[in-house]
Length: 272
Image 1 (tube, rainbow, N blue to C red):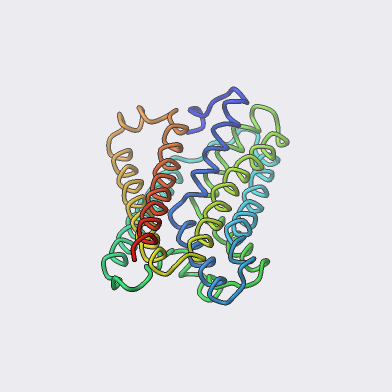
Image 2: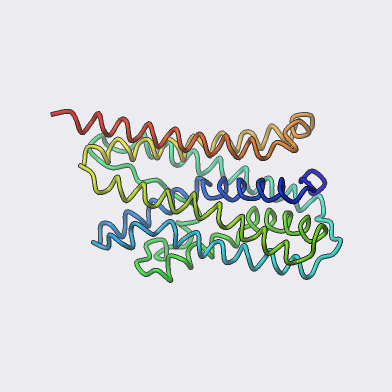
């Protein structure tokens, strides 16, 4: 809840930046950027492939910024009803469990000589758009992603806190900080995937499996933690105020998985 967000503006800036980073490492973001990067690499558009993550997060961030400013302007003292938070929690939990199950199943079903294609659920709903090959369309995919319950409610939450502390300008500043964190995460993700695609086929096989396991495993872990928090209020109470630590834990998990993928692919490349 809002009362648990820090009311010291420097601490709030740091927390919102980490939340932005963590949001950028959302498993569905990772899967969709993976798909956009691969699609453009396969169509011989290396520049677009490389910057897919950045373009996606710019579109996503533009919506976050707009919502942050609107909430900051409209709301002075506005409490989000409890049922809205509950609904948001369950949409997020069920979504993550489905995403995790689908991606782990894909890793285990893919033949050893084939690259694993990570699956994004929101990306699937966007149909042909999830195979965009124009910068504006990739940004549009990111913008449409931001029109989800969890993104909008999280943005409204920090905007309300900022607005009550220092008005709508501070809400806008926090929106920008959140966006920068997300751009850093998604931009690095797109660059990393395009780098792997430049490597030999064998390395791509290993890296795609690590990526699939990361997206699947991370989704299930975050979803299960959400269930535990919902049914055990004492766990929820203990984890309140530790959003920074939890965000860093997600980021570290993804970073470790990436470094493991690179190490394994180097070993694969060294094999005859």
